[in-house]
Image (cartoon, rainbow, N blue to C red; front, side):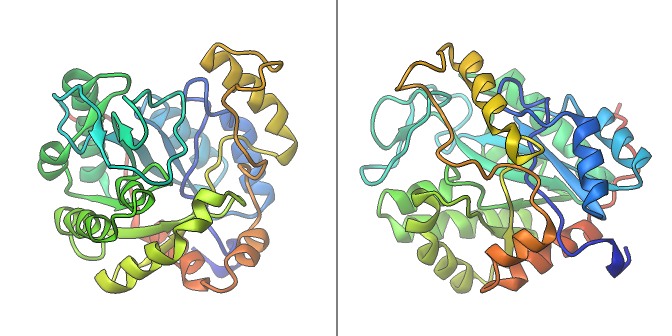
Amino acid sequence: MSESRGDFVHLHVHTEYSMLDGAARLPDLMAEAKRLNMPAIAMTDHGNLYGAYDFFTAARAADIKPIIGLEGYYAPQGRAERRPFDFGGGFDEGTPEDPGAGRGKHNYTHMTLWAENTMGMHNLFRLSSLASLEGQYHKPRFDRELLERHGKGLIGTTGCPSGEVNRWLQAGEFEKARSAAADFRDILGAGNYFCEVMDHGLAIERRFREDLLRIARDLDLPLIATNDLHYVHADDADTHEVLLCVGTRTTMDDPKRFRFDARDFYVKSAEEMRRVWSELPEACDNTLLIAERCEVSSTKAPT
């Protein structure tokens, strides 16, 4: 991957296969990535890998390296348990997609995963399938037991503000957050678990960032910067709001409707991302490292 092919790789991407949430259509996504001279791009759709083949094929056709991933739903309480997990009080911006039993309680958390190799790709298939077959409750959920069984060949992160580590920080439980991060690092292996940092201008991202970075230092977790892509261009934000209304059975006229509190969930250029993370350049450098590491030969499911 030559240095002339860009200086950042988007690794947290919701395509049109993140049903009623992702609005990034594959032809438009690849065209924009190619226009911005991106060397690679990932797909991390919510809880499924339905689009893996189409994504892989479209990226290859555009001469862009495909990285197959998943933003999975992780159940700290176990995939068979239907009662929400209680993180305690504290700062909590709940969403309609996680109908927990109250403040600080959640049926699942989020976890970003990428396949480093073809074995990892097959493990992602298994993890996603078993989450649907054995852990379905509001969402297809996996747990520690499944991650331990099918974690080889995977690279993971602390995830978005709905990740387990971030949920503990929002509850004011730093030690539990650090313990959760240490557990995930041990399951996936040293060097395979990253501290994911985001900045869309949201308070929930910035309020706990120093604690998240402290955990990264304490546990020697490498940093990774992502932009939580849900659409391709900045002016697609309005269309995406309509899509969210369909998914949550509300209308644009509803002042209480679920909405994103920023308009930054698009394919930002390398220059934009480098500017946002100018104080943590290694977080952008590591996106190129992940792109180099991830090499999947095919998306054919294992037999």
